[in-house]
Image (cartoon, rainbow, N blue to C red; front, side, top):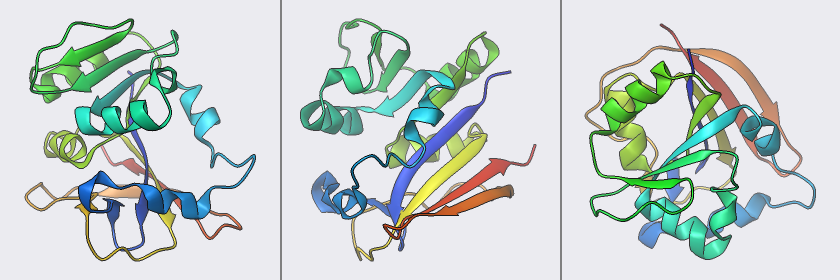
Length: 177
């Protein structure tokens, strides 16, 4: 069965964005030739689930090919109906139903790239199997929290921790079934 993986960065105090969806703090650990395992990770996926605000940010900053490269399906979770573009589907239905359906189909793994609303909805339904969280060495003090209140407790099992000379620490956990 396919697994759903979270691969995301957060500040040491647990924020994935500063106010107004500002991700500029990620630049603190940018280093030529270092992708923190992202390319290797994306080789194992063929489906991406992403919230519309995160999708719009990446579209503006990097461009559409970051997600829809012709090799994978992209589901943008949104409240607004929009026509499909290439392999990008704008999905307005129940996210738990979508992920359960995708997990039952054949294919590579599923990558949840945020944002916090999507992540926490999946956590409420115990649908994230793997957590790869890069901790950026900064205390933001405010913004969008990775983990929101109001979801069930969930036990996870430690896999690895990697440190990088930029100060980033990458934590890898898996869900205990």
